Figure (cartoon, rainbow, N blue to C red):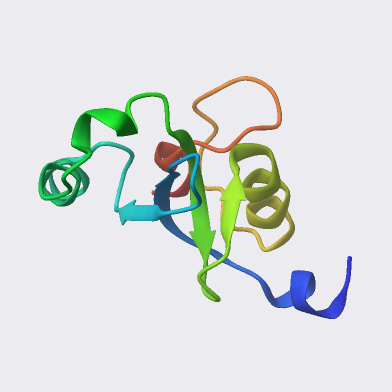
Length: 92
């Protein structure tokens, strides 16, 4: 782990469009995230966007990356899925 990785924390769920835009929410496709997406002119183009998380630096993290960080920082409260991938339900 580099110095930045040691201090990284997972802060919220996010989805990343294939063009790099990111939308955040407390959980994936919760009402807040859906409301933000509906305001975008290409709302329907977000189907299939990559689900992941963001850290406190605003960096998008794939579910696998987020799992490694959350595990190292003791953020996982309860495992809800299999494998080394993070789900928002794992955090709270």
